[in-house]
Image (cartoon, rainbow, N blue to C red; front, side, top):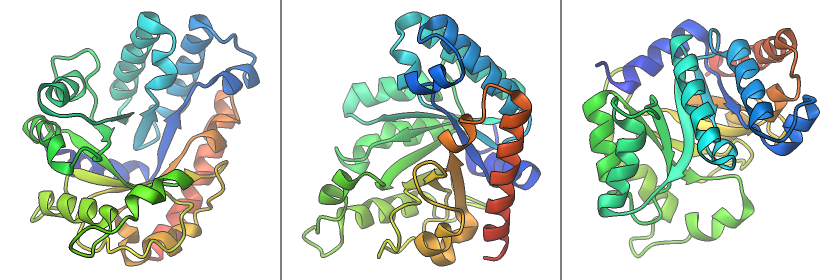
Length: 278
């Protein structure tokens, strides 16, 4: 199979630089007039898939909002993943997993092995047991054309205490994560398969992203406060590698499919205008 980096590069060229999250939290279910139960979850996921699956490059379901309904919620997540991929979207499952040894290997098998019912194109992962602890994820992703997006500089205020702490060599913890992911992508063309998560709301990062050679997922656009124009401040010369991500800004337009698509198109146009100027 082609690498995730190759497939992502092609998807963005064909559909545009946009990721949209599917986050069926209770407030959104209510906003859509749906019940906060498995039936409401299923209806929400089907509408979002119909609206986004055949036109957005990357769709990012948040696993926790499906898991909270137990096995039936996970069954809906499995179905949603299949439908999105059948519609041509790349599926980035937002799970933020991170562990060591056999446990992280099991997480890798759950999401990055084509034989798994939860198999997706890429996952998010937490590196705070050490980037090296994620090696089984990186290895299985590479073997099966998958991708891994590693948390680096997140938007939540609590993150700075860990991510911007200074290590013995003078680099911040975040910069060590950035540098290790850069090494994994070294020499990849047109784009590496291992990305970073960098919040769109954090302003000038003070970190060097120039050597990453992989996708930079930028959540926080729209309802969380960032605009497409803010991407220039956050990413600077690395803008061509940015994958902007919206969730509530788009989902708030539901449950009308046409309205969801209209907001998505506006978000994409805003992002194209910024990224094309890079």
